[in-house]
Length: 481
Image (cartoon, rainbow, N blue to C red; front, side):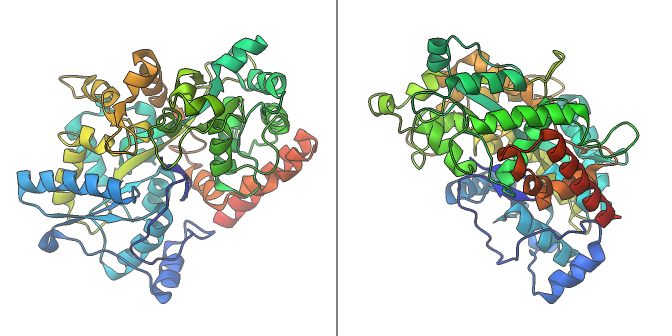
């Protein structure tokens, strides 16, 4: 599993930067020239690319097995077209540094797999060839893509990149423990808090979720819960709204959840470990946890007591809610993060368009197969067969062990897989696709809100914490301006 929050990675797999770049996007994400000078002075790195040398593709899927699968897909493209492709593993933060350096020197990759925050920042700085993205969407059929995913990478009415895939935050719960306690599966943040309090007994925590201040996973958890609770980053007038009544209520639910969570500051590693060990009755995590619950990830096996006899015990005794709702009975919201194919300015535009079209067409299922549980398709099918890719994804073998990979549908059933795909078509994020994309991206990259949330876990008034969050967002907005 690899999950993404802002410009960093929130996830258990080891990250590899083959380029030796420094990390971090800097505070002023809009100041491209200043950042470029700083990176160049520090001896940053860039990739070779262009028509003379074939194509260069930067990917954040950096582990050796995933790199090998992507190289195999690129080789198929080369067979079909005669165009060579170099696949370069590079984490998102390193991409940010290296692209600015490359833009200064005129040496850029041809295709990059990026998050919506990167698409917004790079587009605002003039680093992306948005014409290629627009042409590619028109060629493949915009109706075949998730409208929400396209919206998240649209800047000033123009698509900055083309959606490929994504993952969503889910509430996972032990169906056996809920049934024994007479608790219905939670569908709202308040119900989740009620359930966590009821289930926090007998040495088993009610839930495991991110609570480490300033941590990327807490950034992810905070936005996911606040979005679900109806809390918006800005209001209709464009003013920061993190101190609104909806935000205060959502923070109150977060406070109750944290009080029933595993003791101590929790991050992406500790929360997953707690649920896999049977030490928590619920887990708020990314959808890529599904292969681990099923015992398909040897590095992170289920270790609960019944799991010794049945490695799929947790998969068989876990349910999940995709879109938690807030007060008022609305449809709910699922935090999700997409990966998108972007083409930098100065790239081999025609070659890049052909390779990106291949990755979203003939090679699409093969690309998603790198990590199906974390790469839910943002393109459901083709104009001729609207469900082709969604149906094909459900049958992709999942898991980290090549000798023990099975489709998620085989483990969880077709209905569960359909819910995952359906939820992914309506992912929500603060700001992306609006005039506030730069603010949202900077807040996520800096983990500014997660740094201010610590008092909430110590019993502070949620209204006071909401005011602190609003002040932090205003500071970042002023810095951007």
